[in-house]
Image 1 (cartoon, rainbow, N blue to C red):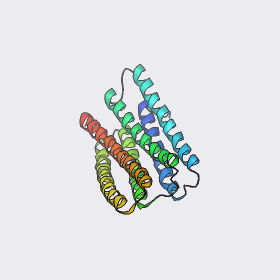
Image 2: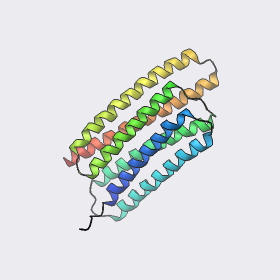
Image 3: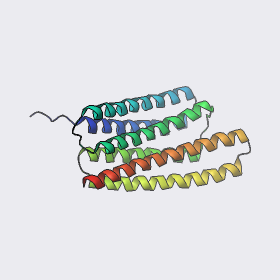
Image 4: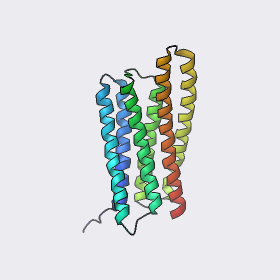
Amino acid sequence: MRLRKKDIFFETLENMADAIVQAADYFAQHLSDLSDLEVFAGEMKKYESLCDTYTHTVIKELNKTFITPLERDDIMALITSMDDVIDGLEASATRFYMYNMTQTDEYIGQFAEILRQSSYEIQKAVHLVSQKKLLAVREHTIRLNDLENQGDEVLRNCTKALFAQVKDPIELIKRKELYERLETTTDKCEDVANILESIIMRNS
């Protein structure tokens, strides 16, 4: 029996979600050894470039496909919001390289774990969308919202600690910018959840 070919849109969305998981895993795992910042930033750039190709694939296919499995705007919004997540991860890794930050801290580790967990929730949700199991997606959007709230809490805690403990103004600026970049990336994960909720409402 011949296997049915997977829809190009669902396949590309799944590939994008899988790449985000790989990038978030790499980011979290390599914070313990930042001895080669150029390699760290370079590897994250490869993931970001890969996801750019997936985004371009979706745009190209939308331009030539008459009937799509979801609303065209929903497909575009979903791939764009996922691209924002990978952009945030890559931008955070680049900050380590630009600022020559070879030391991490507990707060950066907490952000990395939130982003890692968020990436898995995105992956599970996107694969469920591909299987047309839309109501099951809600469990993961709720979890993404919860993780974003955790990110807000980490930002409050690390900002308070930063101004209380760090006296070097240059170090303070570098840490604050990185914390805020990481927290913004958790916001981008919540944006994916919001797009998924919109898709559930339109198609259920």
